[in-house]
Image (cartoon, rainbow, N blue to C red):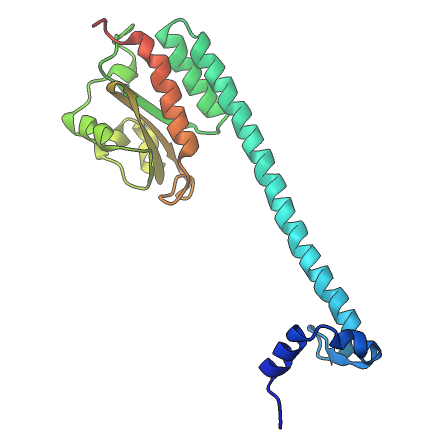
Length: 220
């Protein structure tokens, strides 16, 4: 009776002592080499399989190390931003520091912010430019940051002459008990802010800025 490959494999799994009883036979078994078709001893094939598995594990470990290093660098940048937000004593300094950190630390040259329900230290600041009801609706509707290619035309206009070059955007609502503004970042790279990307750090950024701006809410 001819046995199938599955039956042979099942037998070997159920009778591991077979390899003890026929240990010498293993040295004589020749199997195909995975890369060029020639035959090699089964022991050499096992070494190759272990080497390939080790290579895969090393690559995965390298990825984990790189991710850890990238997250460490990002955490340092968030820390510097947090310190700036906490130590700014004037709203204009806070806004200037935010622009500087996003541009220099996070490499985001295109950034816009609009505020409402906040005391305007200097009404001439672009952050206090009057916004339409549509902008307020967008900010209210965002349960988490938005990333993607589409924003309202009014938001694009916040970026001035740079607007025509921008291909992706990130929007984070600013809330302190109520919505007080909208933070928007733009990029000329269509893949810088894409819909499937993680938004954890963007959400944290919005929360940090919101908490810092809470000091400038109208009394009562």
